[in-house]
Length: 350
Image 1 (cartoon, helix red, strand yellow):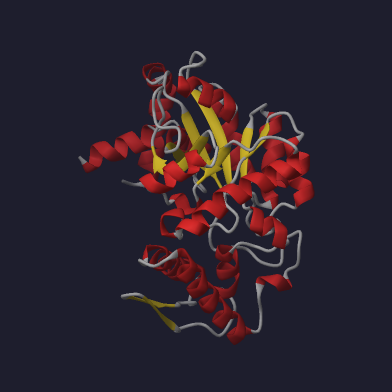
Image 2 (cartoon, rainbow, N blue to C red; image 1 turned 45 degrees about the horizontal axis):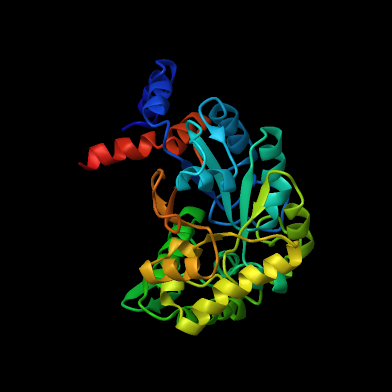
């Protein structure tokens, strides 16, 4: 469907009051939103990722509209509702950010604070300790450097060719390489080793790495421990765990699984002097065993990247979320986070 026709359709639905009806029909369902960062493209920065983030304007404009339809609540409030301990506030919504990058605090939080919206940040404690970017940002930076065009990488049964002829094609190469790595059936330790080998090869070929950019880069730098402690004192901010090393829990050894869950929790609690009761699965990877391990480690909830709403009585360790769009208009983003576009997509597939 032509983009102009789509926009016209969304405007027609919006001004007809459809979202009000939709919200009423689904008022007892709790929405959780997934984001990783908020940043503006075209900034005077040393680099720009191929993986886009929502802009300040898109984030701000969407929330300006969303507060008319959602009751934004803390994750603690939402868990109380899902347990049946407290009454469900109609159209409750929780905002979450995976990975705990610096732009979450520096860029996204002021916008959330402006709209009086609580938030959950899920940092990875090992990344905080090292103060270094995540592997996916290292890879994003490395693949953009000169000298890699036409290079072919074998990942399992897949072969990925690096195409630097345009930013769009290079983004496609990055996406295919990342997906091939994540889908390969191997232990997480082998996964981490293969990722580091590929990135290391790219960096050796170009002579450049993301470390050249330095700390404080809003695109890729993680928060510091001082930032995390500061966040833990801010009313409306909750800090949860995202493991120690961003491991894919279903592919971790039993020993690593325990360490990743318990150590990240205990370190955060020691630093913040507060309980850490919420967890986020790296890459959204989970299975029944890892979900039980999260519960056994003493967490009260865990969020996945499975798409959908949450209702009273749902499993608190497999909570579903809707992704906040990285582009488009605020109107389209609103239809996305309300679940309407997902519903329409399901009808079309059906």
